[in-house]
Image: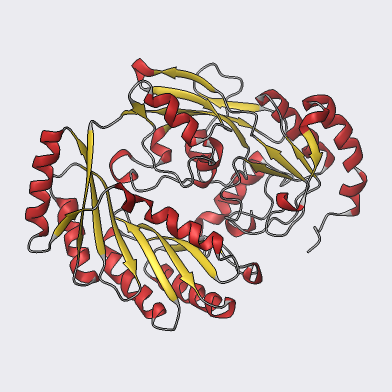
Length: 431
């Protein structure tokens, strides 16, 4: 599929290339290849700035020229969101990968957007600290990428989501401004909490260049306990009982594979004495269900679903759902009804009500199943976002019903990116 680049954008590509070379250096701009395509939309150039000011200058250059920008970190979640309406320039943060300041005594870190989560983990671990999240594909996923997609994982039940962990941010806007929240201010954007606003915005408001996070100590010890529930209703009861107890668990999830009984996993992080006490209380809550020490591998279940969908691009889909914690049993019943129609179905749902659902079937059956599930979850007051699906189904909207918030979201988009330079059409409601 050819990129729908206008003749006007093609005509101005050469002047853009010359000006971008002057900003970043000839070795840091290249023609885009087929591997740089997003949802089969082919960009023209890939630009890799070396500083946030270079990035802001390139962004302004593209904006003034009427070219569109697709921000890219490690490229692990480029499939998320709708196909772009246009794709002219891939703006890579690969060279913005420094740990700028680790104030270990204050439990904060400031890091550039292109730093990988693995790199950040290793640096923080030297002082016995961590950024308390379990992002997908940490060896490749970048700070900017996880913020743009709001990828928090199972640890959010104890430590909060990314919106709770990020306390400062620098954002390059399409007009070339570097807007910064907190610290030494380059420019304030009055009335907006930038860290919370851009987290989960899929790079449609600005390009994140650096972020500051609150940190937590690494745990002394950890232990994972799992048990099988007889059915979704019992799993729901046990989940709510654990949540209503005084247990200090760090993660709590339910795994579901087609007709098999649901499995509950609970993570504790404490001293050895603390773990012994916590596990004893948990077993009393779960009785008479049998429990096992299952080990840390169970917390890879969410990533395994995403990876399976990536490996089966022509016949599988991965959806992210959001429901109330009290609706988990109902959600499992709806998944079971879909699996009964010759569709392979697996899911991991966190106790917060956020889950990942893997579906495998021919594209036509997949499309029907996703539409059915979205309708059911939206009727429950929840949502279903399609994160990975076959190219034959790209016409399906990734996000579903945006609700009453869409006019406000469009107004914010207009304020930050009036020319729709950044990721046009990829976000909710075609933003």
